[in-house]
Image (tube, rainbow, N blue to C red; front, side):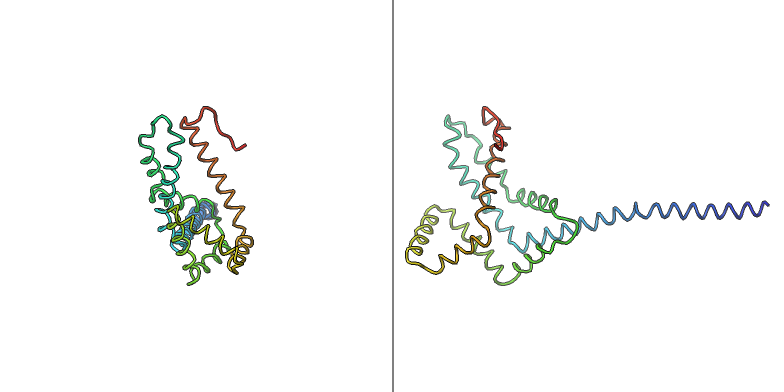
Length: 212
C-alpha cells in the first residue's frame, strides 16, 4: 500500500507539474507575441519613414510653421508681448520632436496584422516613379515657402487653364479621383481646432474654444 501510495503520489506530482507548465505557456507566449507585434509595427513605421522621405520633410514642416507663426504674431501680440514666441514655435516643431511624434502616433494606430494597403503603398513609392513624386512634392513645398513662387504658380495655372492646356484637366482629374480636397480641408480644420484648444489652455483666449 505504501509503494502504491508513493506511485500515485508521483503520478499526481507529474500531473500537477504538467498542469503548471500548461498554465505557464500562455503567460510566456502572450508577452512574446506582443513583443513580436510591437517589433512588426516598428518595422512598418521605419519603412514608412524611409520610403516616404520623412526625414527631409520634418525641417520643412518646421519652416512652414515658423512662417505661419510670423504671420500670426502681429494679430496675437498687439501689445508687444511676443517675447520668445518664435523660439517656442521652433521648439514645438523641432524636427527630432516631430519624428518622435510621427513614429509614436503611426505605431499606435497600426494593427497587429499586416495591412495590405500599406504594403501596396510602400511597393509603389519604392518605385522610380514613386520616389520621383516624393521628391517633387518636397521640392514644391520648399519652393512655395516663398510667397512669390506660390503667386507665380497660381498665375501659371490660370494661364494654362485659359489656353485649355491638357495638363489642367489631368490635374483636375487627379484631385477628384484621389479625393485630395476633402481630407485636406478636414486636416486643416482639425489643426485649427487643436491649435485653438491648446492656445485656450495656455490662457490665450478669454473663453474656451470648442469643436462646434
